[in-house]
Length: 137
Image (cartoon, rainbow, N blue to C red; front, side, top):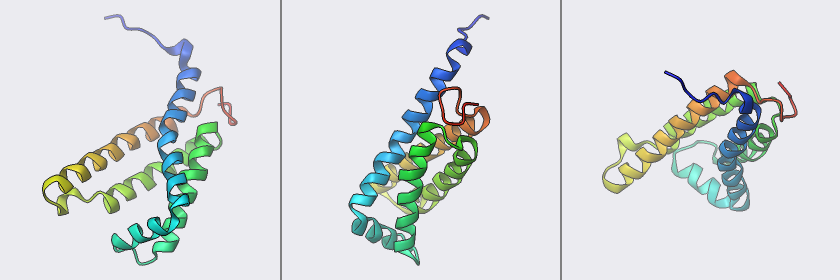
């Protein structure tokens, strides 16, 4: 069976993938920064023993780390860090198994959204950022 090869557009597609995946992190990192007290309150509501520190880490990872991956800087190691971070946020923030009704449904959607994002991050760690990046690999 013949399929369409995208090899000739690999670098362009890797750029698009990096930017599209990181839009989510950068936007929510910015939102967490601008509403920092609300972010701290949410972290406290999850039972986090150090909500201020957790909020600061979330802002740094999502905003700064997301921008770095988007431009293709240290893409492979940062993609692995992001995969671990995204798994942790899924397990801490989207505990659908402990909820019921519509709350359970919404948390389950977000949990599996995170699982899907982890898949994309692992692919990015494997492939690298492509030619259109600071790393240029």
